[in-house]
Length: 177
Ligand code: SF4
Ligand code: SF4
Image (cartoon, rainbow, N blue to C red; front, side):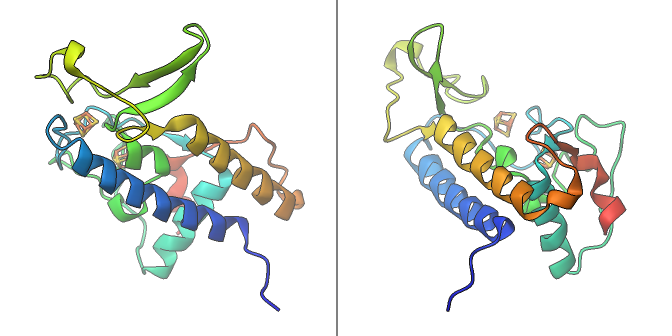
């Protein structure tokens, strides 16, 4: 009998799906996006749910990665001198969607709004931008899926003392490697 997927396995599957969706959206939006290695204004020190934190730790251990360099003086301590991410293959979900046009339900507008990095689509006339389900990522769906996996992780680890609100500073990866 097939064993039930763990929350970390579910997280990895969701991350793979997001990577695929992000790659497709980068292709669809290629004309307006300038995201590239070394462009790091979007990087800041992050907190993540425990399931995401420990999925990253597990992935780094499996890959034989030892304690990553962390420079507390940088906007995100995992940036190197060239503005590149030293934990790039393991980076959290939010880092994988940064820069893409992200659709979310805007309660004030009572409808969907789209947000994206101001460096992207900067040469386009805002009037010409035409965003819809085919060229945006639905942020609410992503957040809902991630939160469900977070809850599954809490149920698997009642001894942890983690709660729905628990987030862990990504800067602490080195403590677990
Ligand atoms: S983890 Fe990497 S991609 Fe994410 S904010 Fe930090 S440096 Fe940027
Ligand atoms: S989201 Fe903005 S700051 Fe980040 S890599 Fe893309 S263009 Fe650069």
